[in-house]
Image 1 (tube, helix red, strand yellow):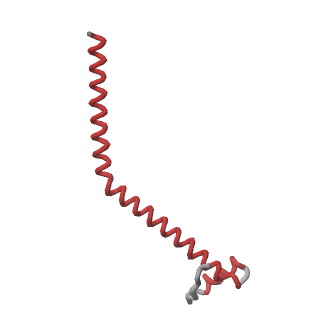
Image 2 (cartoon, rainbow, N blue to C red):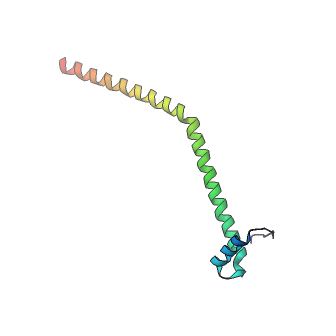
Image 3 (tube, one colour):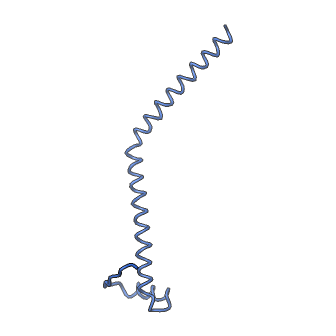
Amino acid sequence: MAQHRRIMVTIPNDLLASVDNLLLVRGKRSAFVREAIGVLIKQRQAEMKVQAMRSGYERMGPLNRQLAEEGLAEDLGALLAYERALGERESG
């Protein structure tokens, strides 16, 4: 079973009223706050992952473009050689 620690958090009255309006039963505040914290943590972790991926793509972009252009040049060279060979076979 998970261990729990009691903490004290100060929140504005209107925010607490909103929580209470959602819950309708004041005794479930702790569960609501735990769930809200868990959801926010998952959201922030996902945002951090997206930012790390974006940063990686930005850093790797120039290299990826260079590699793609080199591959395209090789493909074009192979296509031209193939077409030459076809032309020689048809004329020969």
